[in-house]
Length: 94
Image 1 (cartoon, rainbow, N blue to C red):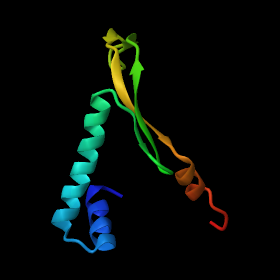
Image 2: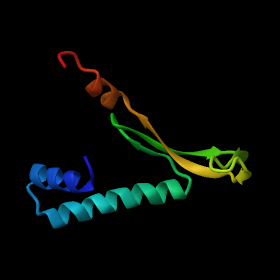
Image 3: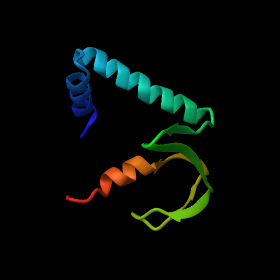
Image 4: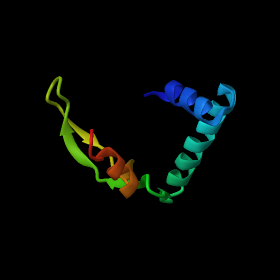
């Protein structure tokens, strides 16, 4: 499922025009992005939690020429599934 599919599903389920659905999805994702950028944790009950993890810098190798390269430290987004999502994925009868 991609953003277009998600937009169509939201529009259909909510009974709203697609232009409104895409706007709401953009607001939702931008709000999560802004919170993570500010160092905040975002928790959606029974769905999951978005956080930021810090990766340290390290020396790697360019696979094309085996030349050593420096990979800088960076922040990466992390999603941890909540209880409700885990249970939905593992329901009996599938």
